[in-house]
Length: 230
Image 1 (cartoon, rainbow, N blue to C red):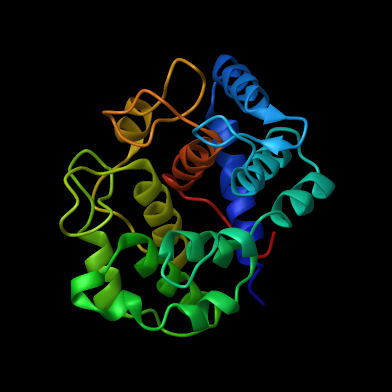
Image 2: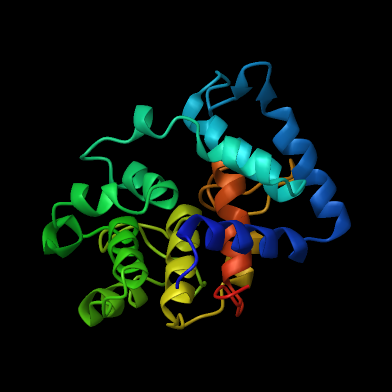
């Protein structure tokens, strides 16, 4: 029986955390705590936000392993921030609820004009979790979204690769047993910021707990990781 997807995500995040040097761990911990307020976690605009609080709660459980913290993080903000047209939100909801998003996607990953990396990853991961054969066409499309730098593009027309797409793609390829064309180590390192987190793209100088989450996910998924039966 396959492990729940969120447990696999959590283990991948822990793997990423363990790859950081003690100094980097200290910096990331300080960053995460700097984003915490009395009522939750702050968004990129500096306001309390249930959606970001969900990321922050999971990161707390990763940094200081705690089943209670993990379940608390997963229980926050999902319904509030996932819309039928928001495939990015659907993917994160998918991590916490493996069944509803499968019905919500409405074939979006199959439409050539609207194929997005995160929606494609969502569909492939769901196929894998349900014991189905992953669509080889979608797998090939996903693999081709990787740049020589190791990062993944959000779509066929995205101008540069980004951390969100890279993290989700690396995790999904690892999940389904497929290898990317390029190693992503240099790409991930290039997005590390002095404040202790990860930037959305190489042109950004800001971060938040959401991208701290994706940075650790990418770091943990860039090397072989045993996810089943542990």
